[in-house]
Image (cartoon, rainbow, N blue to C red):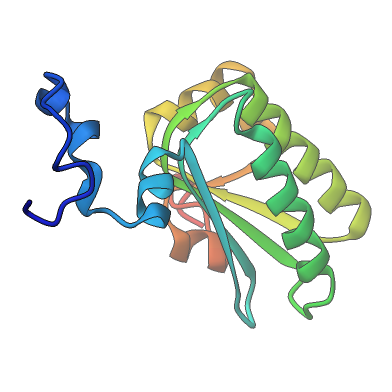
Length: 156
């Protein structure tokens, strides 16, 4: 016996699959490895930052919506009243993601909180442009640009 979980079981032929070799991972790391979307937030004096990494689709959009609602509430109590959504790590951005971002933008307008997006990844930027939401949403190529509110394409 080599101390691995399940080491005494007869070989099932599944050893060739990477997911079957997850014995060395803790339970929490195993769960995190299987998540499609990870969203976290950070409160700074200049803005509340929300970072999304992974896929934003109909199965994950509710998690993003929930985090954005919380972040908007935090931003409302900040002097800057600014929420920045960093989408640089997004690998899929479907219509449910667009709707979540648009809802956040609308809620921000009602509350007097600016919502800025950070993305230079075509997987995120293209759906925004195709739907003409780039004329409504504040989209920035980098986090420093979003923090300062400068649009590098317009040279301002």
